[in-house]
Image 1 (spheres, rainbow, N blue to C red):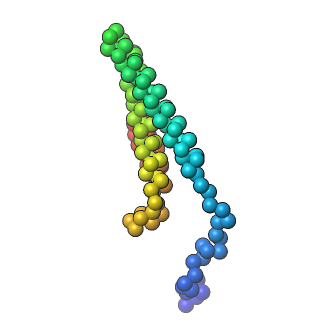
Image 2: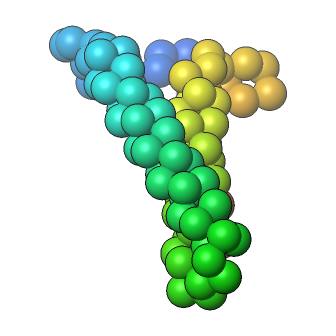
Image 3: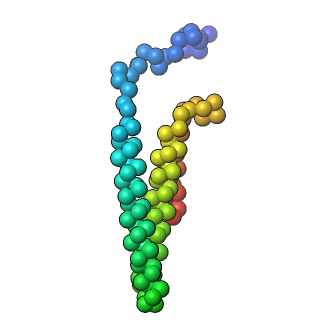
Length: 112
């Protein structure tokens, strides 16, 4: 048996320990705030356009209103991705949920 296949009980990654741990809580708060402001702005704009489109019968404005409202749904996907990625690792997901942001990106691609 070679040394490559022998287990020593020592984690080889321990030799490459990180000197500092990055705390991204402030960045996450800023990102969540930006998503919330964006979603509220798009929802208000979309609702106003939808109301005007219904009152005037404008198909162009109706299409633009639906576009704004679909953008709100993508903002909600991003927000939920951020929320899920904050969860701590569990037995079922020992590496955590940080990939939830990537899945939110896939959801956005589907909506677009």
